[in-house]
Length: 387
Image 1 (cartoon, rainbow, N blue to C red):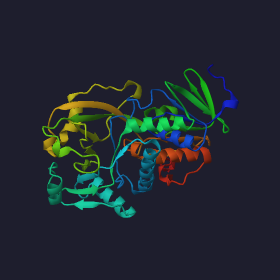
Image 2: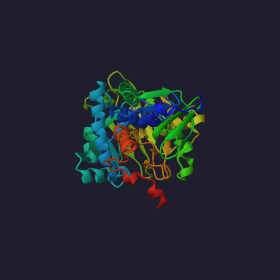
Image 3: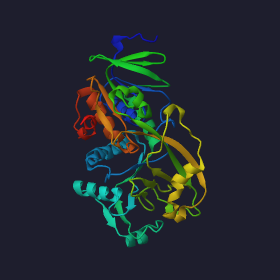
Image 4: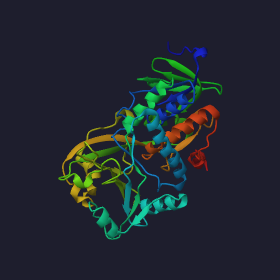
C-alpha cells in the first residue's frame, strides 16, 4: 500500500530513472553486490526521452572541454567491458571525421583535447578531404580532423543490455513506475510512486528531461528542448557505406561559427538510409507534452547540410523527435545534493552525454555506496554555478 515502508526490505540504493545513466548505474551497482531498485516511468529503452534513434556518436577528442577526455577513456573501456560481459556488440569503431574552419570551436577544441591527452589523430587539408572523403564538398577555408578510435553506440540495445545485466546480478527494475516525489533524512530516502513507496539508504536521480522537476529547489534551471533527427535515402548509397569494421564512410560532424554543427553516421550493413541531425538547442518543450509532428521547418534543420553532402540528396524516409536537457552552460551536472548527503544527481547532459554512460554509471555507483569516485568529475559539480 502507498506510504507503507518495510525497513527490513530497505534497498542500498534507489535509482530514479532507468534511461541512459540510470541503466548504467543499476548495472554497476548490482555488479558490485549492492541491493538496487531502479524505477522507470515508461518501459526500458523507450522512445519518449533522449536515448532513442539507433545511434549515438562516441568521440574521444572532445572539443567541448579537454577535461572530459579521462571520462571518455574510462567510458571506452566500459563499452568494451559491457560487450564482453554480455556477448552483445554495442560499439562500432568506424572512425569520425570533423570538418570546419580551423578556428571553429569544433576543430580548435578537438585539436586541443587531442594534443593535451596524446590522442591519435590526423589533421587533413582541403585537398586531403577531396581525395580521401569525396562525398564532402566543403568550402576552401575548411580543414578536417580524423579520429579513428571514434564511432557510435547502439543506444536502445545498450540500455536493454545494461538492464538485463543488472537484473541478472540481482537488481530490481520496475517499469511503469511514475515517481511523484522523494524525501530524505540523512539516514534513508523515501521515493513515492503513484502506487507505492520505497526506501533505501541512498538515492541516485537520473531522470533525464524530468530531472528539473525533481530537483527544482536547487536554483539551477534545466531547460528541455525538442530535437529532430532524420534519415534520407541517397540516390546511391555506396559512397556512404561502412562495413562495420571501420572501412568506408565514417561518422562525421561539420562545425559552424555559432557553435552549432551538423552530424551524421554511415550506412551500415543491412541499412539503406543515412542519418543526419543538427546539434543546436531546439525549441523549449514540456517532456510530457512533446510535439512529435514533423514540419517542413523540422526537415530543413537536417536537410540544410546537403550543400556539403550533395550525394545525400534524396527523400526523407524517417524522422524522430527526442529531447535535450540543457544545463545553463551546456556541461553535465554530477554532484551530491547540497542538503542531502545520501542523494546524488546526474543530469543536464545537454545532448552530448550518452557516450559517457559506463563511466558515469560507475561513478554514480561509487558515490552512492562509498561517497567518492576516482574519476575526475569535480569540474561538473554545481559549485561552478554558485561561483
